[in-house]
Length: 136
Image 1 (spheres, rainbow, N blue to C red):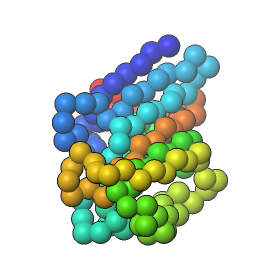
Image 2 (cartoon, rainbow, N blue to C red; image 1 turned 45 degrees about the vertical axis):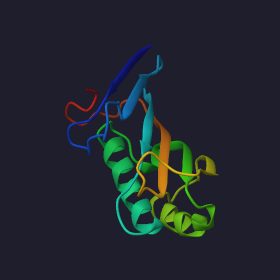
Image 3 (spheres, rainbow, N blue to C red; image 1 turned 45 degrees about the horizontal axis):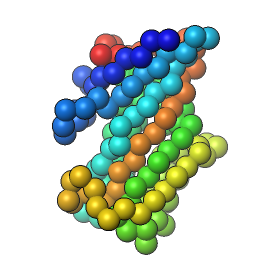
Image 4 (cartoon, helix red, strand yellow; image 1 turned 60 degrees about the vertical axis):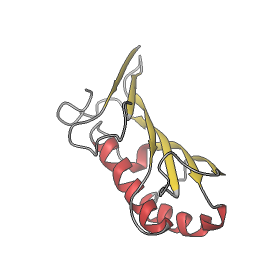
């Protein structure tokens, strides 16, 4: 099994010294992508949620995947009362069969202005090309 950690050059870069994507090549072909938690910028939970999903989409596309390949999603909200706003944005971006999901309320996130953080696992089918040098 081969594991590659890195930050795709054509996707938003991390705010700290960490890898945004861990790509685990599967013996039978295909890969699992584990994405670090992503936060968004903007005023309000809906705007931040949109930015999070745009970033996730960019990171996944750099590895030959898309939002439809997400199999598990973990969401951290600083106010669970905002769940309906987040859920509405999530439905805009995740239109197929919903992935497994965990959503929890946390007192704060590493960026004081962040209202949400989302991390995902995606499955890339065998034979899908990796865009450019994304595996870096």
